[in-house]
Image (tube, rainbow, N blue to C red; front, top):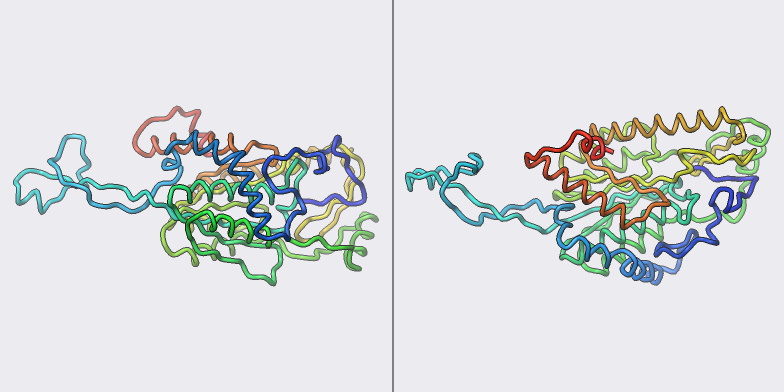
Length: 371
């Protein structure tokens, strides 16, 4: 979201120093450029720290998280009182003079796509990892869990550079496909500039004088990314939309259209500092996407309260848009445990599945499912 300039925040004050972070299986900020070796290292760490544990704990519950879409005719039998009348085979019923229903076997094969927002805002992180590294770790875990059971995975990657088109990776199976996904995600990392350009230096001077600096780039447009996913993903699939949802307005309509054709699961990546600011004095803050800079006084209690109120209003609007689109959402913070968050989300999906099947849920759980 923002990059802190002019003032270096200590790790004890704001947790921005990644040097003392513990190794949790995710790549360190700033890593990249070593290609497939980095992807192999990341996947090996994820397999030992997260995937093996999840695979043992789920024991087939991944089918509750992701269900196939095909149906094969398995058998015909006589109609019983609890059967759905929509499955009555009227031709067989007419010949046998006894009502018969069709029984179907669900195709468990799943094709999943990851629609990843890798714009400049995901490079922010005040905890041990940045949002970008958390996104890569999530994709690695889910992709490997799927491919271990014979499913296929693909991706649509959206970077910060407006001159580079979104990268579409066709769905394939196997561990090599997971390595390919992680490698392509690492290549989408925005390069760190060696020094500030003349325009950036001028903008910093204007910000230091209290004048807002003009934008140097463009904000993320999730609407175009979701529209592109709708056009490129032809076959009905499970689509994971992984983003921090910091975007220009209007993406909710494109998400609703995508959810009509595919089963969509949104994964919102966020950092705790995007909701509350620490009290660290005067700070020049820069928007990671537009380059816009602003000098703020974080010791001003009124400013911190207005910041928190704006963040809360954005949270409410975001959750309302996701609920209106009819999609489930997994919220992941940079200080969350990935394994526990996924298990909790799978449990909520199981409850929603029982609800759609006609089972009742306590009213208190309905708000939790929408969260």
